[in-house]
Image (cartoon, rainbow, N blue to C red; front, side, top):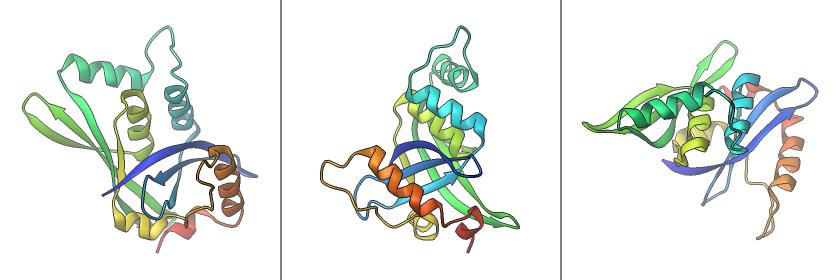
Length: 167
């Protein structure tokens, strides 16, 4: 597994499709784009911005329920990219520390990231997933600006479709 960081969620133009961008923390610094729904994009952004709502939203509720059960999210694992007729589907697992031991629960990567940003849990991706779907590293200065990196990545996205990630 390769440690990743969330760069952010951006809109791919002209389709206005949200794409979640994860980048390797070390090594080749490849960027993994995962297309997500608008609802999950909003949930991730709310987590990043630490938005507090009058009543808990679904991901906040889930974090609260885990805490009430003495369980915590230890890591989000992006484990697989499955081919399907429309391209590919990323598969993830939540690694939970429970009172009775470690438990893994299947998750969509977007839901897992929404939880990880709320809990500070690390994100990892399987090397084979990165080999199949990650974009090459974007040139960045040692003190590179994430917005500049995202802009460069948008240029890459202009020439790619979700179907391109299915092999």
